[in-house]
Image (tube, rainbow, N blue to C red):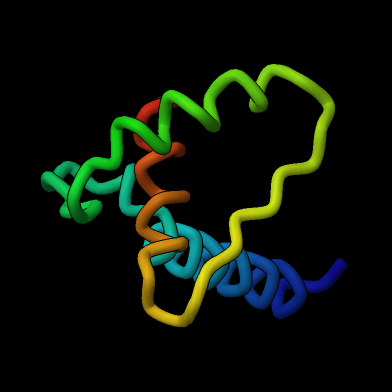
Length: 77
């Protein structure tokens, strides 16, 4: 393995970590806004997370599906 291969590998690793940090707000030390907490939805979904069932969260565009997933992740952490 040459020095340039090691440098390229290190650069790729740093870029990967930068992207992972960007897409994982839980890695940052700042409070995150995950929208309005939907406790009733959480209480319905959480029991299914302990099973091997596949869960589909469906809804119209911009109804909060991604925010709800963030709330589930935040709750689990």
